[in-house]
Image (cartoon, rainbow, N blue to C red; front, side, top):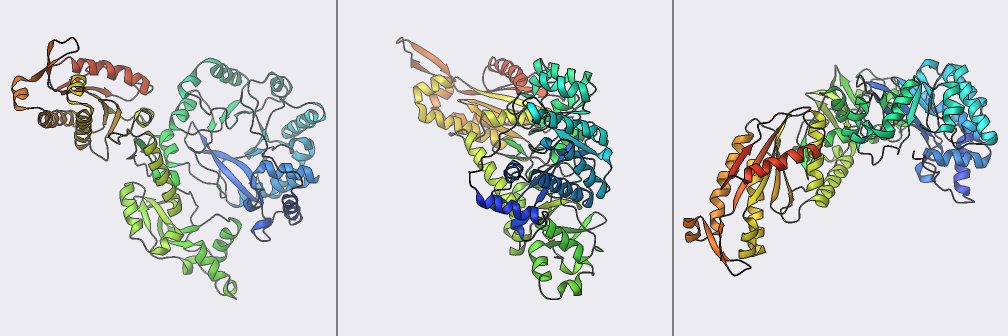
Length: 608
């Protein structure tokens, strides 16, 4: 199993970090200016059975400009200062209070970061005080224990004492170090944690389909036999999420589920919701560089809205305690009616007597009554067009994302630009240099995404017949022209909004057709190719149906005119597990098509 990531190094004699943390502890983490504040973050954990929020995995962060943003740095510096107990107490109080204040749903998962477990029972006594003061029920708290596989001596005993104190305090226990004999003997058998944690990074690089077999399957069976449920971290794709659900994993977190946010979200990402429930609000599919993308879903910030009756002081407090909150939407009966930008409100309320004058009045006084609103189904090209013609203020405040008029969240122009840039870089990375069409990697990813979503399609494998002799006789430059001609024709018969065309390499292409008229599109491509390829041959060659050349042995040899063969396989939901299964059948069907003389279409009639 992969070990947890090591601490980020802190240079010896880092006085600035030490002074900053000392100031934070002195002020109990309250914001005396942003440089002396602690910020809790909550990563959503999905319930794989229901598709709802299972809970939130908490973390604590310091000011990024002081090199103390990472929790590992904070805990390590607290240890160097001899203030671990003070910092752990502050960590618990900050995370628990904010979770309750912002109405976090489900369980609160609290990791015992390195150093916290070393405090033993004292650590859990601090947590008990924090949950009692915030009126958070012990039944809603899961303490995440890293395991005891690599500990020894006093640290081992204190860590075990902390785990036993979790039990006495009524909290649930989650433990890492799966498949570690030492942890199983000292922790699992004695305390029987309710949850096993698959730590972040363990699943990285795994083929999701292989998780059903081998050592991982045995480990899951053993965990289930103990009566523990499994929570997996680091879930970054729909394919991985699907397999984890199939093997009965209870919960999952990761960037695909939702990124860490300062305010606990009430919804999963739209893409994760669709994968779990089947029909997520705001689901849309765009093609860019061969990927099936959900750009607005990926950048959607699930920021809780406020109502027209919310007081201005309450909204100002939201901005004050959440430094990275850029805007807040005002929603009435699920419909957004305005947007309050951070800059506008802070600028206004910072002026003399504004709190006294407007603080106890409705926040609508500060809202933009004509916010930029974008439907999540809007194609990327139209979203870009809307932003290009938007008022400059929208470029700062951001825009509201809706689904058929219903509020979903907020998006920022900066995030949109970043996502588009990443898409373009990814497209350029895997595009075929001759046709600029997506290559093998995006083709495989796209097919897998449809298989995971259970969406039917027709996959057409296209190949040129008698292309090698044409290349040998007429030269590679003319051969490249024929390849580009084929790419253009295939792209023209595809619907840019629903279909996909990729270039495997050489004279091989793949079409993924999702409309019911896929056969008519293939026949149209054959007609167009049959007409336009004639321009590459003389009238006499066309009359003969080919041309005669001298082969390598000095003998005259007849070659038929270059033609296009298309083999089509209909893909039904549940028929194939991955693109590898599809490719085997598609290659066989293509060979059947190439066995037919001239421009040909062969449709596979077998069912799977």
